[in-house]
Length: 197
Image 1 (cartoon, rainbow, N blue to C red):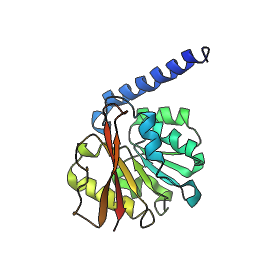
Image 2: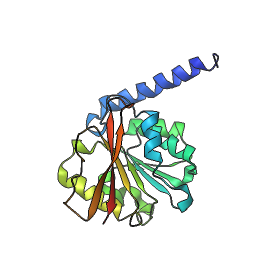
Image 3: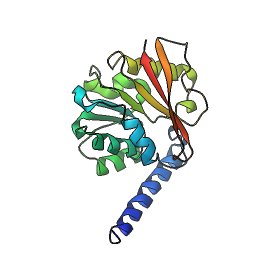
Image 4: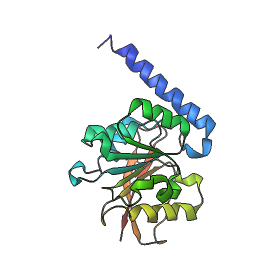
């Protein structure tokens, strides 16, 4: 155990360094001051169903903490489609997780970004995009778009540091449910679940 500690610390520092480089290069696309905690990553991954035989769509994977939780949950790397806007994070993800389907692009333009996968249906959507950094109209349009790409009743899960849902209820054909707080995240974050009504 003692021999593995320096490697663990080095990996942790490297992940944080890449996160801060991404934060400095594109601050609007990074919504936190530190990477997502493994505790929140596990909770977010818990909504995904590997037995559905559908791939999962992850928006804004950042340093890949939630992506790794999805792998531990049982998803094959080829069944994880991760859309990341930051070139810095994409380089890191391509090195750390070379077998996932990583796409560098804009989640707000999914048809264009997904390309050949634009007609693909997904089990669910897990999003780490800092939605509160974007206008409300863009948030609603993104939600409506992704809900059309998953089976009715399956969720889009979004985390946020705000007190209220980043996409309010009553503005479209979707329901909003609070999935819970994760106080072990820094800062503590709420998770919100959206489904097609």
